[in-house]
Image (tube, rainbow, N blue to C red; front, side, top):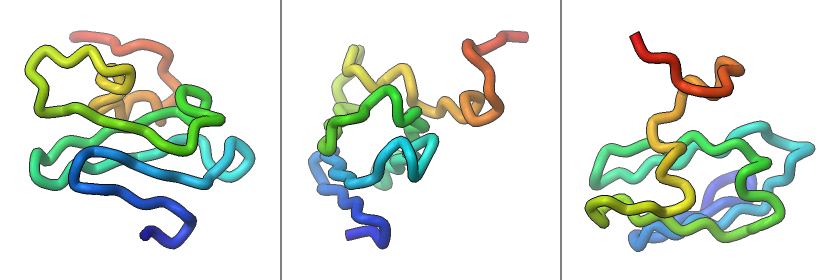
Length: 82
């Protein structure tokens, strides 16, 4: 259990009680795979349970587009290559 009401399981399930008034992003770290997800609250609210499938090759899970998406915290709308 995390301090502000979040928890995670080994199966890639994250439970949170945070709201849009409290945070802007949720950063999720999948330890065994060394993957980070940076998810805007608007992408999951009002859901309280998020599921991740990072080991599924070619996964099209709804949060895969937020894997390593640190650029979102800079206010960028889309990744800029180059």
